[in-house]
Length: 192
Length: 192
DNA sequence: GTCTATAACTGGATAGAC
DNA sequence: GTCTATCCAGTTATAGAC
Image 1 (cartoon, each protein chain N blue to C red):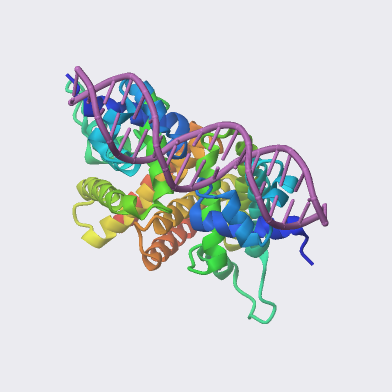
Image 2: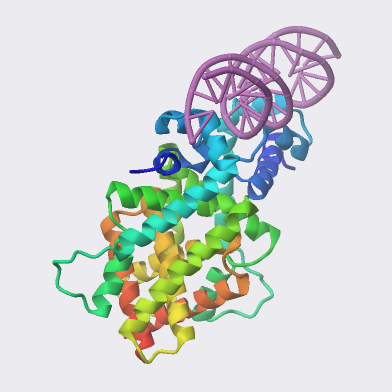
């Protein structure tokens, strides 16, 4: 059973995906979550607190759906797992759209709100490490710095492609193709 | 001589880079431009009008400084010109910071404001074509689709790296290194 | 075209009861 | 923990003089 806090955070993630961080109104959040504004302040102190916790919530959730595996599926090769993990972020499902949109908003907001930067940097780092580990599974002999660099490029590219998709500049299918090609190139680069 | 309207738009671009679209206050804009708030409403009707015109102004301007060349410099090889053009976007000068920040704001805003999408898509396409042409200079025998793909990946990566830099997640020098390596890899990929 | 002054409003945040 | 009611600061936008 979801606690009140969680319920509010879920509503915040939905609302941020719908209106953006900029468009998030505490009163509207209260309505969406079915609680009073005062309760939100009770739990999160202030607007920034809401944002910070939502960011945390979102990146935790993203890790879940990232690592979630269908138990019946045949075990994936490291290479397949890498590709699958990254392409998972470019899918038109409500959950992914919500996470990606919120992530993009938080990234953009952090440019002007130093309070958000630390959390954002930490989440990014976690994500980069995760992808670097997957790359290491594909290329066990590659040096750590090379894996880190490839991961940083792939995740930054993914963020860029994701924003182009969400802002209507790029078709989803094309974004996926571009990402796949980049993965192939990076894996190839690590092999030489 | 800059007209009053232009003067206001320049001030708006500066301010958006400093505070973001959401942080733009009409009163502050008036102070920055050295005019009254009433005059701004006289010229731009409302806050949205200011934003629309400013974003137009910014994307026009970005096209200019991209193509601008120092006449005294030694002629660059196609490869050098490619690298120079892309790295130009990752520099800590007021002008680049202003444009990149504003561009990021524009990109992020477009996710929620369909009105902005068309302009954004057009500007992106122009940029992608330009980089594809530079890549074509380096690899004259590469097929057009391959050039287009490489350009889309490099420019999307650049946007992603730029956001990480501006949001304090990535050091500028490291972002430049990552981009350089990606350029090398794409050029290499086109050569095989 | 441009200003000063101010009206009208939005939205974040809190007090105090339950 | 949770609500109702409300305050108050900050903002957009306009009226009217020059």
